[in-house]
Amino acid sequence: MHYRAKRPILHTVSGRVYYDDTCTLCERGAAHLRSETEIETVGISSSDIPTEIDKRKLQYEIHAVDDDGRVYGGVDALIKILEWHPRFKWLAPFVALQGIKQCVAVGYWVIARTRHMF
Image 1 (cartoon, rainbow, N blue to C red):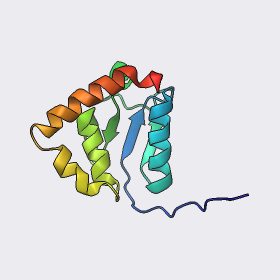
Image 2: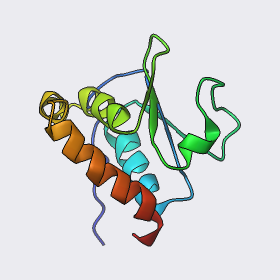
Image 3: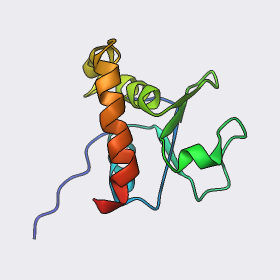
């Protein structure tokens, strides 16, 4: 029997990510964040959702809240999460580029609307 040792936490960030915990794809992403970072992940079924975040939007968009309380939704949240993640930090400025961000937004929209199929 093989056991894979848990990887050490690579990066310390006190931001929070709010996601649809009824979605298998979203839950896998949140589990990855929990295993490799100290980013706090909060499912939408939790009662710990800030009033600044529209609960209806949470069903279609991931949200991130930084240390200063700024709220990011959808692709902007994805970019913020990339900035926080040590392995993907390099990718955040690329995804934020005009044109690329719009393409990612279209892909994000499609995946967000069909995520329960994965």
